[in-house]
Figure 1 (cartoon, one colour):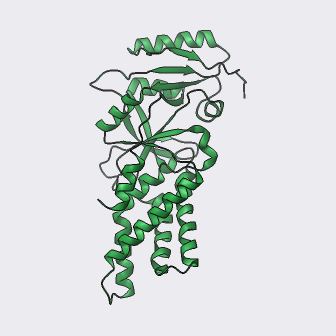
Figure 2 (cartoon, rainbow, N blue to C red):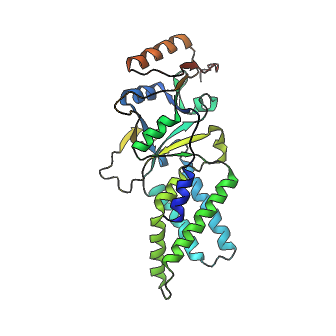
Figure 3 (cartoon, one colour):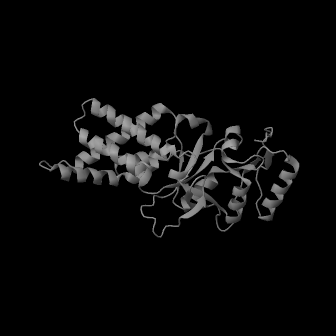
Length: 295
């Protein structure tokens, strides 16, 4: 196991302990319950798609500082920065879906539901972990703290440089041979770099306290179970994350009904729909208590 692979395992070793909430619209709820699955979108197409670019920017900043500081392998560092800027957004595919530690945040209702048409689905963490393990997904806690992100990026760059230097330790290599071996070294750690990038988020999103399920990396989409949905301005690739264990309906721990002008009748129809599909919410359904404002 190489150093970056171990780093990835350590990052995804955190275990959630509280209910995990997934915000969605009524349309999303209908799809989740009927298909017994969540849509795990290609992370490059998610709502805050700049997050992968955020990781590339962090790496570029670290690499530039090392080159300016007189690093003994400036060509290696420069080539790595150029490679990561391209591959992190145009290389292998990684799919993810988001959960929040807090199920009733106004910012999340605004960002992930529609006026009067939102729910926050709460799952026991053990249930999500079991579903993830069955499908070889990883579950990671997003990192927002700048200090921790910079320390992590330093570890990543150290490991990449050490790995590439090891592959090119032979003396007398031509520049083109050395460059090719650098590229090989980068490709060997691409999967783990992508998984790390998937849980590094800009500090401005820290309120979300997000946990993310992350799929196995797909290097070749041919034959992969990739589906497409309509996004804001493009088609968005996704795969299904199965929420059914042993063929049973999804198990919900708790549910919030989002801001609505029709609390009583909306709550009534929501309960009828869930009952029709054999879903009992363990801790019940609560109104979010946030005043409805028509946008």
